[in-house]
Structures are given as structure tokens and as C-alpha cells.
Image (cartoon, rainbow, N blue to C red; front, top):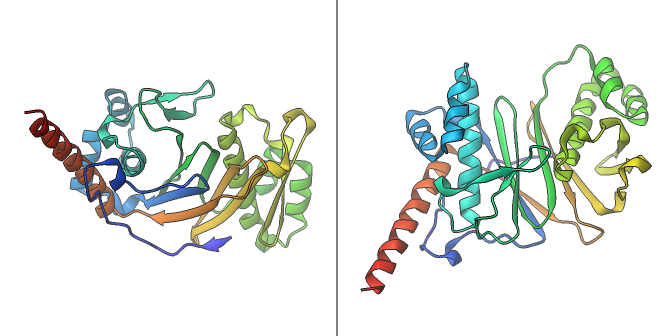
Length: 286
């Protein structure tokens, strides 16, 4: 449960080949996050719109409010830009499919090996998690003041979570509410099944920095196979990460902040590297 330090990454692709990509060891998970307000520039909007597929562009255009258009552009550009740091595919060329529960996944046509990702966004914060052959979920929430914590908790939390929540002093309940909420979201997203998993059939126990999970027998899952982390990007936002390690050693989770400059550089650098490689191949073939 740590406060993140801002780390803006601006290095791009040094060479147009796979060895120039950012390494992602099998025992690491990287979470990139971005503040939407920083991306409200004409240059970013133009570059991000150019990345979108026809379907994504249509979805963007259906949003009535501009802040939703911007949030969508940041989410899609961050996802495409981040994935292109780990695989030799242009940001504009990624294609995605939805599983039977609606979770987006990388289409099988891409040669990415075991690369996986997960997305989350609030009105002001977007996060993109990447890992290799791991069931993983990330959730971010803006910790708005709630007037009906009791009603929401009793409807969505397990009885033990509700009891633990209201055993806390009133001043601590909102913080704990969002910890429970983001942890639950990270678990159902990691499972790839969304709200088809009843939220009251699994329960989190928080004790200092220790995060435990328990399951109703109906879920047929094993607590020892899971790892969860809580982070605070700032005082107003809660982030949770859920990872299924299957009983092996825990993953190392690395968190990085992406600026609008870095995302634009990734997009440009990936395109330039692609063009350089294409030119090299053309020259070699002559």
C-alpha cells in the first residue's frame, strides 16, 4: 500500500529490431498509468485518433461529452503504445478480440508469444498492465465521497467484509471501501469473467500490508495461488493489482507513469523503427 513516485519514461526504440524492445521477464508485471488531463492537447488527440480502428473511431464519436472522448483516446493510445514497447507491432496495427465475457484480448494473428494485458480507467486516471502468460487484473478508482457506503457494501461485499468495514472508525471506512472495491475488481478481471462472478462469493482480509483472500466453495479457487497489491497513485485514487501465480514465487510488480510526451514518442519511434526496417529489408533484397 505505497504512494507511487512519478517516473516519466521518454526513451524510445533505439533500433528497429526486437532486441530494441523493452524486456519483460516472466516473473515481472508492469503497470503503466497516465493522467488524462495531461493528454488534452491537439497533438495528442490527432495522433491518438490516427491509431484507432474503424470500430474504435465509431465508438469514440458516439461519446457525447468531451471528457469521455479524451478518456477513451488516452486508454486506447496508452494500451497500443505500451504493447508496442514489448512486441514488434506498430501501435496502429494492434487488433483485439473480446472473450465470452467481454474482456479485450490480443488477437491471435499477432506474434506476441505469451504477452497479455489488462486495462482500467477512472475519469482522470488510466492504467495498462502487461505481463507474460499470467492471469492479471488492474483496477483504478477515484475515491469520491460516498453517501451510501452501507447500502453499496451490503449489496456487493461478503458478510465478513461488511463486518470488518463497519468495525473501523467512520473516518477510515471510505478508504477501506475503495480498497475492497478495487481488489474485487482486480480479481474478477484477472479471472476474465467480470461480474458473472458474484462479488459476495469471495472475501478479502486486510491486515497491515498483508492482503488475504478467501473463496466460497462454489468458486473452486485456491487462495494460495493469488497475489494482490494496493497502491495509491495520489491521495485521490486507489489502485489494485491481482495476479494468479499458481503457487509459484510472487511476481515483481513495477509501476511507471507515462507522460503525453512519452506516449507520443513511443508512437513516433515505433513508426520510424518500422519504416527503417522496411527500408533496410528493401535495400537488402536488391
